[in-house]
Length: 275
Image 1 (cartoon, rainbow, N blue to C red):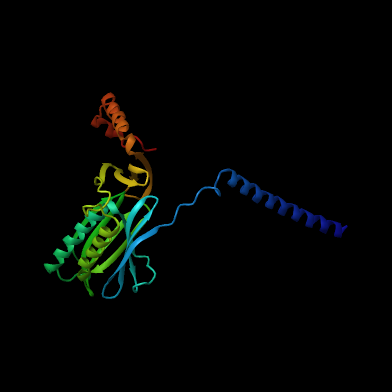
Image 2 (image 1 turned 135 degrees about the vertical axis):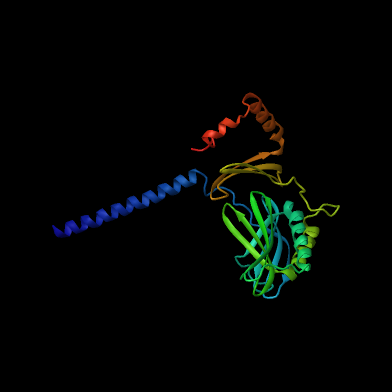
């Protein structure tokens, strides 16, 4: 009897195992029916051009890449030329290249003025500016520590924060490297960077911000509207509108504005879209 019970127990365990496998098979079939395994994979980023900017104690690898969203710049800190990029890096679309280079030029000129900061601070701050593009913020901070003056570039997105730092003597070299790569791999016939699109616009309705970014890819020009809450501290919603629909969306918004004129009294109860 005990042996039969043992066999029964083994059969029971086997049955449970069978049911477990059956469940796995069901999940796999369900996933296949939903197309998860049959969906086409996005092509990996293609590197169009790359160069290195040698600095005092590290190097910057500057690349122009392209994927299904279009061309973009990637700037990474590396220990040595040809080495693997580290975690310190920033990325930006080609449409941001001109403004990015203007920022670098401005800081290169500023560094030559030999600015001074109040004494007694471990890390001195001299100047800070920012730019916004594609729902990303880029902060440029000119600072000084025991190693000397440097420029820190920080990129913030809904996914977190990335940054690179370079000594003040390398700012011009980075500008020239970016300029040359853009000229070779992402320029129009007149030498201007591709996709000279309108600058990002921002609408603030506390606690929300709405970013309007014009972009382009192999399908054409589009408008991306990104909603963020508490300066990227909460997940956002993103809507992409093709260029062909802009006029229709504009007309709908105008009709709504005409039918329901805004009054400041609506602000009493806060954001109407909040849950």
